Image 1 (cartoon, one colour):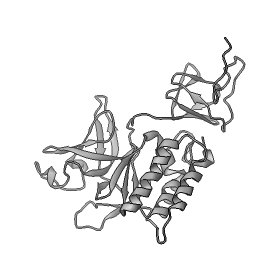
Image 2 (cartoon, helix red, strand yellow):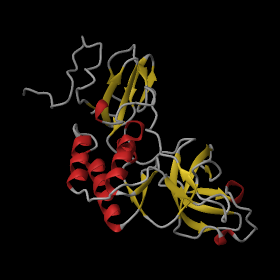
Image 3 (cartoon, one colour):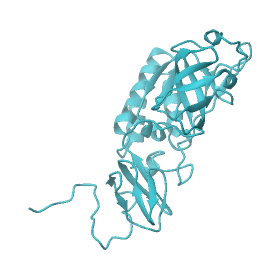
Image 4 (tube, one colour):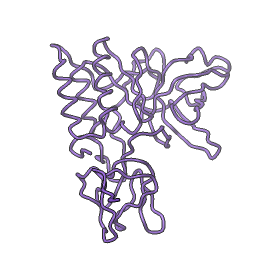
Length: 287
């Protein structure tokens, strides 16, 4: 029986020695060899025995001298330095337990908070169900995830709502140098805080929140298709109302309760081995 090639898959002839053009949409499987031994492994790939292989199911994105694989889906795997949105699930005497959408919950110790918390008084500062912006500080061999709320832009989020998208879609949500987030806030008047764990906090009026949720749903469901930016812009423009204009930064509770709130800086596009403007950032590097 003749075996044809599925659309979007490359020929696997023995003579092939270079990856397909960057604009080709090529699906690769975990463990699949990526042709082109001169390429250096980027996100979603690894090198073994002088060859580069895909580590996830996703779309191949060659950007010489690197090659990356943009995952189609997957659970959040924390990395040191990630900014994430956590939900308080328990209050203990000296720490809060946070759900950061990772395989394990992350304890936030009182020494990693901006407050001077007395033993047994953790629930005075954070309660079960509240949302916080924290940074992944360490990953231990035991699986423990260390997080901190000390640092610029970290703190407790007030009001608003939280939606979740695939962590693989976060670079598309952010856009190149924050372009997608700026577009959504400008059109809707909403406030947005993006966590690299796939959680996104939205603040604003009910209508602003609803329009933002719809834009994020489009990105989550269509993030692997070309023309995504144009479709999102079209939706936002068609639902614009006079006076819509949103801030590009999100106020979070300051280190001291009586201090002026500081702001959460826009989350940069997820870095990869190709640089800050890596694949998937926006339609300029559309896949």
